[in-house]
Length: 408
Image 1: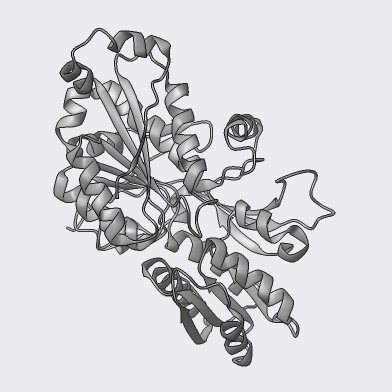
Image 2: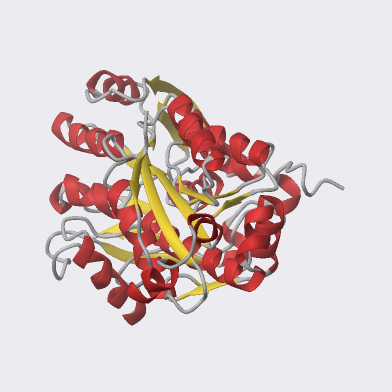
């Protein structure tokens, strides 16, 4: 497949600067970012066009006074690892300097290998698997926004503390679902809980979860853990409401739930669900102002933590390129990523965040409860904050991940 190319110059001044240059000089002075995402599948609203919009907003805000142009490309990986890997290989061979976003953990892990092979920078905002900073960590990869360990500790831990000590999982059958079930089950067991069973659902392409919900209900757990995301989670929550799955005291744990999913489900059905994000748009004046700028680009879809991560990661990448110089940044993905790790990222959405040697960026996580329709004050006002986990506690300890970059 041929990826879509869309050029974004930071301003007319940047365009004017490049116009007289030879093609070779212009290419040498242009930094290319490829947003590899889901433009048509179950994660489209959670990533997709809004991830592209947030990346472009970061380029515009970075400005044109740094002596180089920025080109943003985007492509749809269709949630298929082979498609994603092929696009990544083609992009890197054609001079793309950074691949960004990449939801769907199986695709994210495949692109991780290509980035390592090509010595090119890769910042993952969309995939959840904590293996990206564990056994499959790479010297050219940064995991930017969230992961399965953080989700399991925050959402799963909260459910266990509330008395949910017996679990049954409905799990998307690919790398993300497996990792989220694994990490959540570990927290449940550590707290003295039990796993009663689970079922794995085909991905992608499953829309009818009725048989899986009936199996879960029959096991009589206190909690049904939804180790899935996007349209799969939305369908599970809607169908559980239709079938009365939660009657009798069973609770749903939506282990990865986004603002966009709640918008599709509706507050009447989603109210009371617990979830975790590292960003929510109403947190303060700065996040609200930024969200309004993004909403002007994508008026039917507000940003979640993945989208905010694409913006934040792009800014940090461009600041590092400006600091290193374009030639040095293009020469080695390892050197570029090492420089990004050596300096904290800082922006209005996440504040100041350190990046560890294993590529894990550290930030607080927020345990959130979905509001009732009566509690919501307006469109997209769906969350109330329950708890904040500090950055140094939210993610897996460096010593426990098994990343080859930090052994010994």
